[in-house]
Image (cartoon, rainbow, N blue to C red):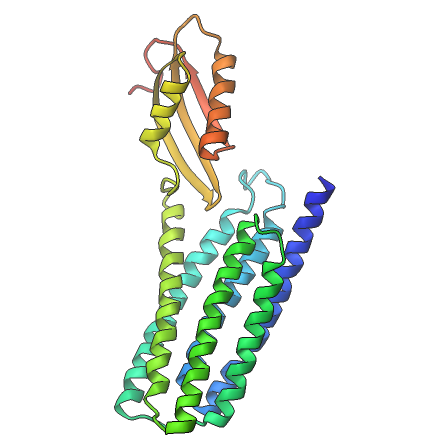
Length: 293
């Protein structure tokens, strides 16, 4: 137990350091984008904003998930990260629309971009992203929060490379349209991440079935594996968070079978085959279901 606590606190610190690096440089990149008049740099700052928020959510989730449940919140505070993810995903889509509009305006009338200001900031951004990735990658790789955060930072690396490429092209060729063109590329990276976040969080908030569990397969597995089960019905499966599925269901058994034995077998299958460790199973005899069918 003590070892797990040490791992958790170590991962919390890694998330916090990555958050400070990414968030701190995002502010510098916004200032640099304004001074250099580079939309690509501002778009990369927007991408870093998405990752800063993702890191913040991961860090908050790691902290809040250990808070105990209370009388008002019987499930604790796990859903807070899902709600925040939805709101941030919508905000990121608005940022993409702004970048797209601004890119069209700049393609029609390309402004002067100061490559000598833009280039060192973009290079520094790449180094910051590499440092953040190394910090996260050195943590516990079984931690889903940490793995997701590392993937977001990898996306930032591409944004920094795009900004560096735009600065080099402008410096050597003076071809200004490359800046809005590459800013659209970065915006598409943001849109991809934002749409995934909105779609996933909406699915969870609507109590959707987890992607990795098929209800029909679950029912078939239980009835085939546990011979004492006559029927499985009223199955309701949803997620508290992406990695915390919850299940309620009714299981019908013959009247002469010990319910406790069947229940233990069912719980074991749910954990080992489907990763569901929070379930409520109502055992019924071969008489009619009390809730109807």
